[in-house]
Image (cartoon, rainbow, N blue to C red; front, side, top):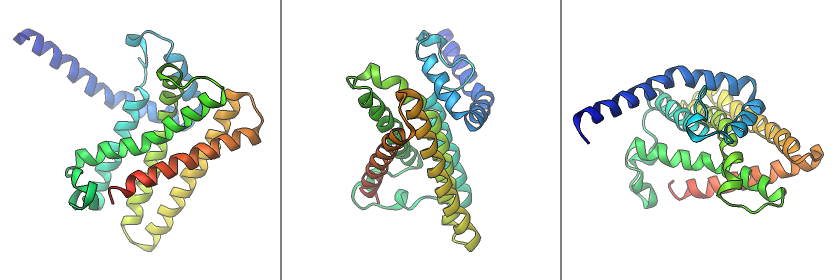
Length: 222
């Protein structure tokens, strides 16, 4: 790669990173006020050519990653390093930096999108493969990012170890799970064209599977 190509690559990288300052708050606001519509929007974008996808928002996985980075930055500022980073016991020794911790957390929170998407594909009696899983996984990343923000903020409040913070953190975590569960019920109801009770069953099963997988994986690093 010659010097001109290097400069051009840096130019594109700089534009991409700085554009996040515009598109992250836009994506966050749209997902906050119209989560189901944003999930539908993601499904539509998956049908476009790759270079034409998500031109006016952040892509769902990137939105999830940036949300986790922002929550992690707030955690560092308010309560300091997580105990996992300092621990050298068992698999936690693999998480030696904050970058490693962010990567672990994105895997943990990505369990929700992948298991929700898998439940939908199976409920449709389709074969689970890269093609059938991609669209629902991407759409789920939008709302998983909001769940990560709420749960991450709840953990920060609880770590402050003050009475008001413990109450606020616990309430925020409960609200986050209730909001996420209600949204998933509506999502399954919309995509499966089934009754709300059946949609609630699919959503509940996928949430339980996600939480169990998340707790099992996180316990390996505790």
